[in-house]
Image (cartoon, rainbow, N blue to C red; front, side):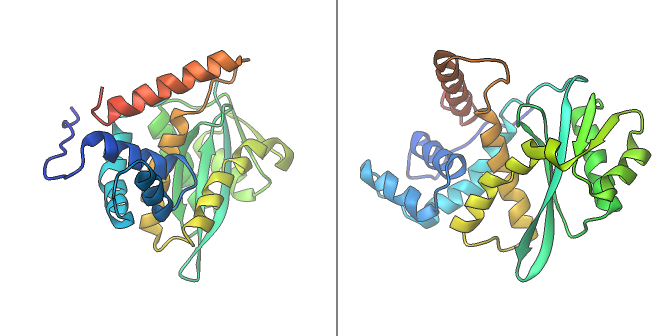
Length: 232
């Protein structure tokens, strides 16, 4: 069982803390911009306090968010993007499904078969079942890892078919520019785990949807966030 959230010894009420954390992880905002937005509403909070709230409560909130139920009909889109940290190249390996929902992501120093196998093993363990199809670009490491980990799954290797995974990197790229880069691989891993979980909460269903359906989905997402923050 997840332990209940505690806001003891915090000067600000939980509603303000949860709102500040939501602003920081949901939108492409720097800590100082979040500070300014809170100030506009009459709340004097320093950007350093917002940073501490994000580090402390961000992971706690995401642990309480419900994950999308895995299905054998899912299609996995896999891709990797380079992130330079302190002059050294690291690779952020990411998997998303057919709806753009981030399934998992892992920071590694390698871009080879060993790294691809590690991603696939994590995905199988986390999802609990293999997908209907796996789509990647033409990096040979994916094909080699596929043959060893789940050869029965259909694998399509084509750059044009993998736009969904490549587009999933764009929000993080925007945040990387605003944050002026990441300080460490561990810091990047912690950030993307919360950043993607918050983004997943607001990913609408793939089926055709009206403006009213999208509006209702966002209201449900906000209610789920408040429940995770212990405000419901």
